[in-house]
Length: 171
Image 1 (cartoon, rainbow, N blue to C red):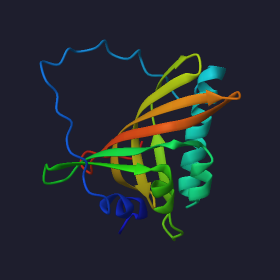
Image 2 (tube, one colour; image 1 turned 120 degrees about the horizontal axis):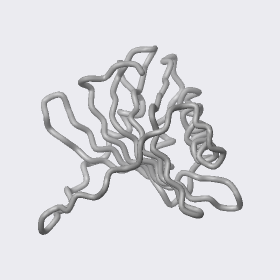
Image 3 (cartoon, rainbow, N blue to C red; image 1 turned 60 degrees about the vertical axis):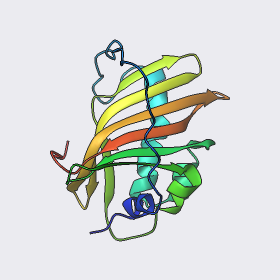
Image 4 (cartoon, rainbow, N blue to C red; image 1 turned 45 degrees about the vertical axis):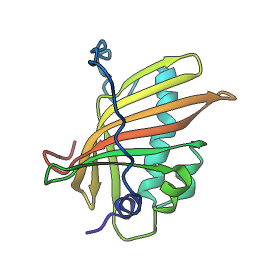
């Protein structure tokens, strides 16, 4: 079964890998993740546009997804293919939303144990996810959302995620 979102991603050429000079210095780990539903009001507000995006995806409604985003942002995926090869692709929000087409498939994205950080009007959410089609795990990975608060409302600026098809179970 073809996933319309995956089809849109396949149309774009991979971005060149970013070179790094020198050794990598590990950074401190994120604080412990938080169980859902999240009880902190500010963190729950950060999750609201993400949950609305997932609802738009489930409804096959690209416009509903766009309503939760900042237009200058976008979506980037780092795919690990079953053969071990890797690809990185980036879509503007308009390109991402254009790939969401009506269809009979039941689409659902589930996140678990999100780590949520807020500093003033910026926030990030880091969470493992599984993407289901008709109730079966299609792919999984980790989502990283960057959000901006403007006029009291949170908007998703960017989402970056890893994606693989091995080791995925419905959460």
